[in-house]
Length: 156
Image (cartoon, rainbow, N blue to C red; front, side, top):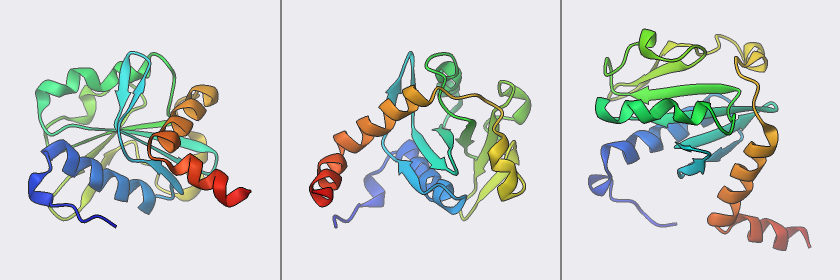
């Protein structure tokens, strides 16, 4: 396994690494960690748990926030959608309806708004996601990282 020099990562890359850990800690058994194009927007991370999808966008500065929500139009991905930023970069009131907000403190990620309080509530996502579009994203992530070929070799 390659080691990563954390000193060379951009603030967004560091946020994405932390976001992937947050997704796994919150029950996502599959996580696409590298950014994926989605319609007119861009998905930083996607996680899947209990048949529901979790989209996560990461921003370290406010000028990039305007593009955060373009993915909400087409395709319709993510039963749950969150924005991860440094503390107080954005407030929950600035988010589109249904979006959740996470703040990345130095040693923890704070659930500011929109995060289900229990495992059962994850089943009630605020968005109806296009599962075909999500499947395309997922298989693109598998293919891009060579994981699909590895899985196919194991299955034969």
